Structure formats: C-alpha cells, structure tokens
Length: 450
Ligand code: ADP
Ligand code: MG
Image 1 (cartoon, rainbow, N blue to C red):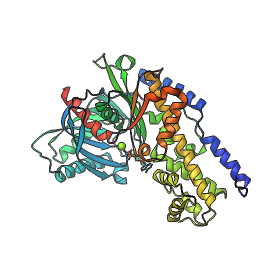
Image 2 (image 1 turned 60 degrees about the vertical axis):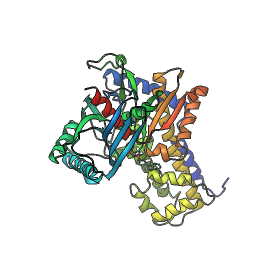
Image 3 (image 1 turned 120 degrees about the vertical axis):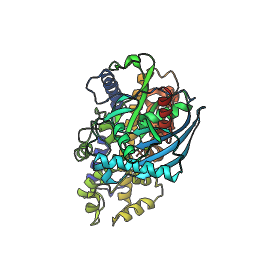
Image 4 (image 1 turned 135 degrees about the horizontal axis):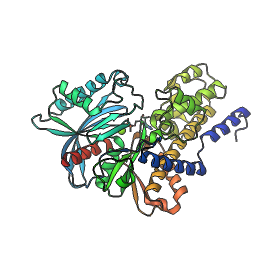
C-alpha cells in the first residue's frame, strides 16, 4: 500500500477501473445483442453487422497451383506469389511489402490504384516472374465491400484511416483492372475479390477441417464464419444448397458500453459513428485510447509533473499500440524500459508511480480489448454450436493477437468463464499470412469453378 498517493488519484483510478471493466453480465448481454444483429444482417434488415456473403465456401484442401495475391487493408500493401500443393500445404514463393504513403490513402482513388499497379510491376520485375504465362490473382481488399460476385464488389465505406476519393460505391475490381491495363500489366487475371478475414479462415481451413471462424486482430478487427445458405434469407443467388462464408464486418458492432474516451476518440476520427467495436478492440486505436487517458491524468495534475508532459501527450499517436506492448512487458522492479520509452518521448521528472500508472492504464485498455474480442468470438461460436459440442479452431491473424503480451490468455479466460470445461473445445490459432495464402486459395477455388 503506497500511503503517499493522493486521494484524488485513488478515486480516479477506481473510476477508470469502473469504466473499462467488462464483467460477465456485460459479456452475456453483448452476446445476445450480437446474435440479434447477426440475424438482422442475414435477413437484410438494418443492422450494425452487415453479414456480407463472400461467394466462397471453405476449401477442400486439394486446390493446387501458383497464384498471385494482393493484400490491401492496413499498414502495408503486399504482393505475394503463393504455391498450393493440393494437400493442405502452401508456401509463399515471394513477397514484397510496400508502405502506403499517407497521400495515397487520403488522395484520389486513381492515385491509390496506380500505386497498387506500380507495386505489382515492381514485384514482377524484382522476382523475375515469367510474363508469358497468365496468373490468377486474388485481391484481398479488407474494407466493407458489397460483393456481387466472386470477382466483383463495391466499396461501402472506407475504414482504418483510408479516405481515397472516388472509390466508395465503385467496383474495386474494375478500378484494379483499369490500373493494370494502363500500366500494361497483361500477365495477370483478377480471379477473385477477397477479404483478409475470409482469407484467414480459408487458409486455416485448408489445413484444418475444424476451423470455422476467421478473425482479424491487427490494425482493424473483423471476423467471418460459414453459414448455411438457407439461413441467409437475404441471399438471392442461384445456388441454394450448402454454405458460404459470411464476412461479418464485426468492427462496426455498435451495442457496446462506451466511456468518455471512446466517445471523444470516435468524434475526432475520420469515420465518426462507425466501427465502435473496432475502436475498442483494434491496434489502430488502443494506443490512442491510452494516450487520451494519460493526457487526462496529466491535465488533472495526477501524472507526469514535468513541464513537457502536457504538450507531448496532447499530440495524437504519441503512444502507439506497439508501445503499450513494450510497456506491459516490462517486468523489472524499477520499470527501466518504460523509463526509456518515456525519456525518448521527452518526458522528464518521471516517478515510479507514473510508470506503474502507465502500465496499469495499458492493462485496462488492452484487457477490455481482449475481453470484447473473446466475447465476439463466443457469440459466433455459440451461434454455430449452442452447446459447444464440437471442436472449433479459430484462425486469428494480426499483430495485436500475435504480439501483445497476454492478449490470448485474457481471451481464453473469457471462454472458460462462459463455457466452463467445454472451453477446451475452442482452439485459437495464429493464422499468419492468412490474407496472402488464403487469398491464393480463394483464387484457386474461383478459377476452378469457372
Ligand atoms: P494489418 O492489420 O495492417 O494487416 P498487422 O496485423 O501487422 O497488419 O497489424 C498492425 C497493427 O498491429 C498496427 O496497427 C499496430 O497497432 C499493431 N501492432 C504492431 N506491432 C505490435 C506489437 N508489438 N504489439 C501490439 N500491437 C502491435
Ligand atoms: Mg493483415
């Protein structure tokens, strides 16, 4: 017990505890709301869950060949060449990463698609790809898209900081084909439009038949699962039997208790009123929530008494999610790594209490994120299998899940709390590169069904 801690500090910490804690009852309420939104989305009613048919089902595992995949939807743009061995195995033959410049994300659609085509050109040349052959390509475009076919779909709205003009309402495959043609890239046939979530599920399901949920916990957050066509009452397609993967676009789920930090963050974001779950759960936002709390404490005179703190923490992105990872993994008694991080930021007069407090704030923010993510997965699993009788593999892609200390343990605790011993039927597995390998599998499925 630290007796020198001011009362205002203790009061404030218990306030933070209260507004960031998600208890069992909150989770149960959330799951009910989730099911109701899923039902509405599948029926074509207004819902925060769009429940978008992806036009693909889970793969057989026997698809084979060489394919090109594009991955756009977050921090980097990637081009990959992937080989499928027809036996559940896949390997990335070549991959190039391109940083998406801010002006490409927020300029015109033409700029963005020209950048994509230029990157493909660089990839083809750098890897000396034989241009006399034709390659089937899948475009992983991880934004809400209303798909009308396996290789056609219009952008509903931008998320994750993208705003490129003239793309919303357009078919992104048409825009990609136009850009490829204008650059004279003729060795590529765009076979499929994919989504990182669907790619993740498909990639994991290619090797593991029990995999029936794909989840993204990276810059953004989303999930998908296979649904029986008879349950998709809005489905007007020719095929009536079997199932199809549904891209839930769960980042937009809105029935969540939000606090003043969430509300302010949303209002100052470039998509206010949307993506409430994503803004609580994903890597693009956790650092920013943390920064807002720290700024509030500095402002109240409860943290970092040095002269620069206010100015430093007034700056957006002064704390990023990867910094939170570092802060939470510092287990030294004097919290030396946290000290180093703060000193680099320009903070002075750092006390041990300041450092402990910062670590505690990161823990509150990340624990809530992991619990909400686990609650959402639980909602999907209990929709598919209310008694949780079968084994389920949840394929998860994203640096947040992969790298944040204890994120996955916190999620597992929620499964135990909700499902008791049945929780052992849930296996979370990192599906690294789902958006690349999965896209190749989708391209294979699409190309072979023509
Ligand atoms: P994307 O979602 O863009 O495809 P990633 O899955 O790599 O890419 O996720 C990137 C996001 O993960 C970044 O926005 C960042 O917030 C977060 N991130 C990156 N490194 C770490 C880390 N070490 N710990 C926690 N989160 C991280
Ligand atoms: Mg990704």
